[in-house]
Length: 203
Image (cartoon, rainbow, N blue to C red; front, side, top):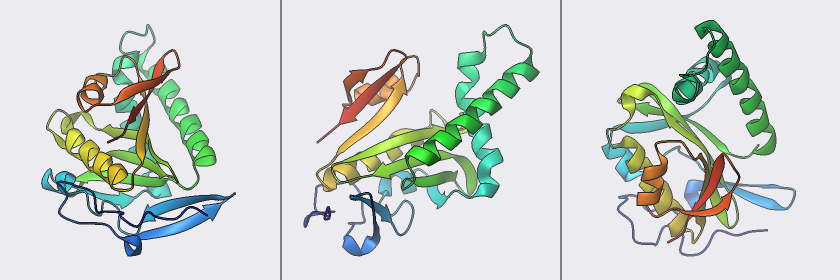
C-alpha cells in the first residue's frame, strides 16, 4: 500500500495552508491507493486569492458541465460546415461519451466544479495516485478566462504535486491556446499522441 510521504506539505510553496495526512482520505482499489482532500481546494491559496472556490460535482451539475464542455469546443467547431443545431447535438453527444469514459476509467478522481465569486465558472477533474497527479480536465467558461485564474489554479496544483514529490500530468490538444501557458509554466512533452500531447511537470 502506498503511503503519504512524511514531508507532505513541507515543500516550499506560495500556499498559506500546509497539508497533512489528516487533510486527506485514502482509498485503495486494485492495489492502488488514491488521495482525496477532505475539503475541495484546501491549500490552493493562489486560486482563493483569484476568487476561486470548489465543490464536488453532482448529477445535477451535468447540464452545467456539458455547457463548459461545449464552450471549450467552440473554436474547434467554428469552421465546421454544419448548422448550429447539428454542432450542438454532436458536442452534447461528445460530452456524454467523454463523461462515461472518464467516470469508468478514473473512478477515484476528484470531480470538481470551479466557482468564481460564488458562481459556477468551470470544471476540474483531478486524479491523485501513488507517484503522480493527473489533470484529467480543466476548463473555464469564456467569461472567466484570460484573467489569471487558470494560471493561479495550475500553480497551486503544481505546488500540491511537488509537496508530495510527484509529477503532474495532463493531455492537451495541440491547437489549444492554453498550450502556451503550460509551456511557460515549465511543462514538457512526454508523449506525442497525434492531436494531443501528454505534458508533464516535476519540480
